[in-house]
Length: 280
Ligand code: NAD
Image 1 (cartoon, protein in one colour):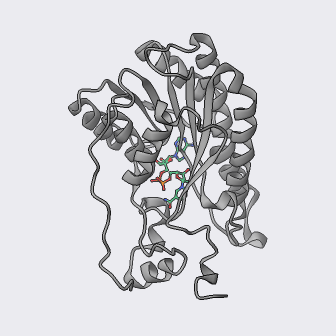
Image 2: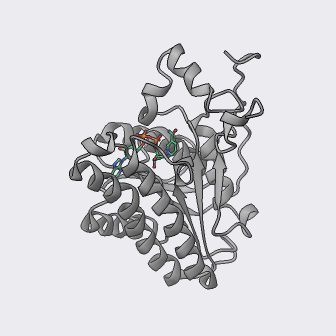
Image 3: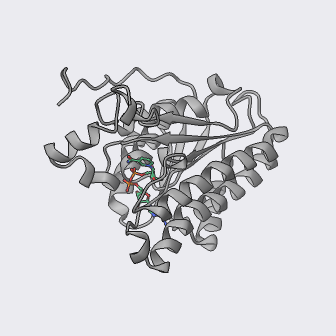
């Protein structure tokens, strides 16, 4: 156990950074995506809550956003299916008129040792985690180019935030499909950022370390697992989805207007080679 209480940060007061802006968050009915949707809402944005399976958790996020006074709606779409992504962006146009912020959050894991990984497991993870981000980014850029910069709303014509992972740089045995997808997200993000910067479209990634969500339940669901996880985290606690949500709200805002084409790690130091923390 860490040599101090397991203190987690308080919920900070929201800043009205995104008033009047319209956001689409993929995979927003659980975990990090849900927290991102709610933090964008707290910062003033109206939000399309994308989900891919059960409707009720997405409707719950919509209700929470509406209780804040935001406009929100849930839309079912598999981000790996081009026709469903096109339908989702058409729905955003119908309901919101414009789009200012895309958070490419949807993702999954299908883990197996390399010599047992099926082609289906490989392809599913690449399709959702990488192709899904490509499809949504492409449609968002079309929207952003269409309306251009509207200075009363934001300095940028649009903002894209890609949910990457520390595994865009840390190799991950037993998860080659996931690590390859996130490594791909890194250069997808940077290449899009380079291409669209002259249109004043900002593109960045967030790379979380261990955040307490359903995707990694096995890593924190018992004290033994949690203590083993802490060996990988110099800051000696797991992260919370709301912390990623607040970073997304900052990156989407004009406070981050000169932040472009980069990955912001939010990992309690997981990328600091924790194996060396006692001198190596
Ligand atoms: P999660 O399982 O709660 O969230 C993933 C969401 O994506 C779910 O709501 C799921 O329904 C949705 N999704 C899956 N396939 C989809 C598809 N084809 N179309 C649309 N939506 C789909 O887990 P999470 O931890 O909140 O993960 C969110 C993102 O954060 C993922 O991209 C994940 O890789 C990334 N991430 C998470 C952690 C962590 O420690 N939790 C660390 C690094 C990166």
